Amino acid sequence: MENNNNFPEKSEDFMEEVSFDFEDLSAKPETAASIPDIGAQVIPDIVPETIPETRPAAKPAARPATGDSIISVRNLSKSYGAKKVLDGVSFDLERGHIIGLLGPNGSGKTSLIKIFTGLINDYTGDVFIDGHRPGVYTKAKVAYLPEKTYLASYMTVDDSINYIADFYDDFDKKKAMKMVDVFQLPHKQKVKTMSKGQQEKIQLLLVMCRNAEIYILDEPMGGVDPAARDFILQAILQNRPEGSTILMSTHLIHDIEPVLDSIIMIGHGALLKQDTTANLTAKGQTINEIFKEVFRNDWEF
Amino acid sequence: MTGNSDKPKNKMGMLLKNDFLASSRVISLVYIVEIIAFVFFMIIKDRGNNRMLALGIILNFAIPFLLVFVSLFFVVYDFNKSLYSQQGYLTYSLPVTAKQLLGSKMIVYGLWMCVSYVVAVFVWGYLASYAEGNENVKMADVALTLFGMPSIAHIKVYLFYYMIMFFVILFSFISMLYFAITASHMRTFQNANFIWAVIICLICAIIMIIMIAIVDKNIFISFLVYDEGPTKLVIGKKNLSDGVSLPMSPIFYLIIQDIVLFFITSTIMKKWINIK
Image (cartoon, rainbow over all chains, first blue to last red; front, top):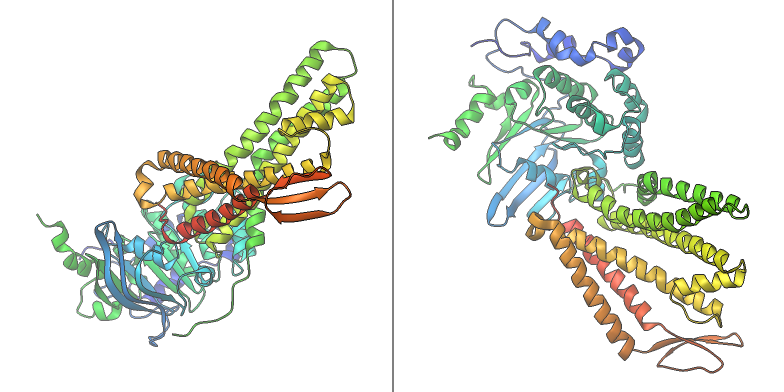
């Protein structure tokens, strides 16, 4: 198999090699300046000659399977007019895992995420986040990164940090201010005048500076170049509090595959596959290959 | 199913603070312009320079219009932008209820509108009294006339009544606008939401006018203020020779309508809005 993977053979090594400490970096401006290119500069040095046949077994932040679910979904259905995007879906998501939410376009991933984050409420069935139905309590526990640029056009970087700090008690404002420097973002610049990459950075920063129990990230690496994708993934992994759960929807399975603990695949309104990545890849198949196998019919002539 | 029962803190104060900050960015600029124009008028009014005086009068006549217009524009613009554009992803994921989101906007923009109207009436009243001769009583009389009020007799009573009436109508107007904008973002109306917002708002306004007329004609609740001092709320119509009888049923109707619209709007926001 040709090596086009950016990740090393063992996830432990991977974490050691590419990890960076934002506090240390902020104390060394010359190092900080190279951070935005971390994907391009650091990761290629540790890319192995060949892609590992099987995915790495364990990651430091992942907790062992305990059967303790952070999200429970029972008979969940959601329709838009006559079109049913979710049809009686049931599953549990394990606390402390990094979970990939996979599915083709229009499969209901964003609808599911919007239900989890309390943005959609007209559905049938039951959804519990940490034992509560989506509402004020769960919104305080969930750090949500939408696919869209959501900050108000008048906001500067500092304004957006102050805004989030006002509403979320788990937001670490000091860390956010440091990360602004590490990310090389101008404090007083309005978000609307920033580049797409800068906007992605500020939104990521606002989410990852929360000490949340659950992170729900909708296409966090969508629409950015490969170097930026690595940067985003590292920022997520490095700033995630231990024991927290990450639910990440993406089409870029190849990029996130090595860091996933488990996956759920949805399509045609149903849950098509749910398992740990260790189990799924035990026979030597990658998640990418499994995804293509599951959704092959969607694109056949 | 178990879960932590620790309740998140009430963030209504933060909503009010941030809505105020967001709205004050533009509205406060118009206030500053108005203050400068008014100070300019005060300085030049007794100096005998007719051209400058004319400029001062024109500015002080036009800027309050701008103030009211900008406030009204922001009532609509910020509500629509912060809740139904992509910014809605941020607003709706905040740990607050739909009622708090709506309530905060109604309070902040309602107050801005009220203050803008009061400033406008004050400035126009002052200009009018200057034109007629600088008597305070005349200024108050002109201000009353601007409100469409009757004679100067029982001035305090009428002033208080019309102030209440004015604020209730203002909040009704805002709650109607917010209801129309919110309803127009429901799935059924989403493809042409601006047109639907206008249609829904017009329907609401027509219903409101008809209902006020019906209520005013058929349900009589009067607030009696006697010249000697005592006041009384009575059911029925009364003409007083020794005091003033104020019709209260339209005010009660509007308050009830505001409450109903508030709950309907917040329910739509909570249950039937899907931010695109």
